[in-house]
Length: 215
Image (tube, rainbow, N blue to C red):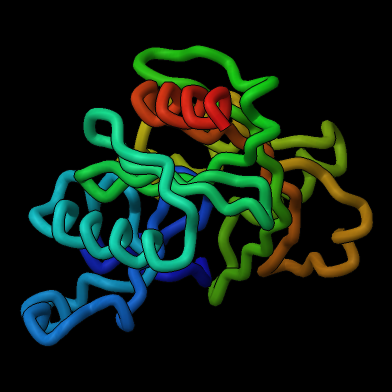
């Protein structure tokens, strides 16, 4: 599958909100040569980063960078928040490196879950395979017949369920048929809409709610 490879676990990264963190090289300074040498940058599984010795260092860099371009919301517990008035969204970053962008509109429809909240996001995604894989015709046939395919079932076909941050967020996730994208399908590729949940830590949700109420 033609996806970025996580530098920590060496497995493909599905770039869904709440499931990956993009670690930019330009955030590294002169004292970060060990990070460069270890190759811990680029698209990384959020779960891998949080469990690694690199999470806290990258979290401090993500927080410092956000502070230069976004409006600070403060810190509550392990979560620091920032507001982007232009996009009407907030960025929440934990001390372990979990980073998530939260649309302010989600305050009205997010649901409560263990130690946090979930909101739903939908994005277009293209999957390309260098070699034929049985999952491609299976997904295509199921989408044509039923209109959707379980996201977790798709991830399990590649063992990627082992690298999920807050798996509850993807329990009801689906690959959705989009007939406007079907013309891009081939025996080794398909494009779909992915509908999935995004996890927000309870401390981050409380910080965001309190900040907006006082605004």
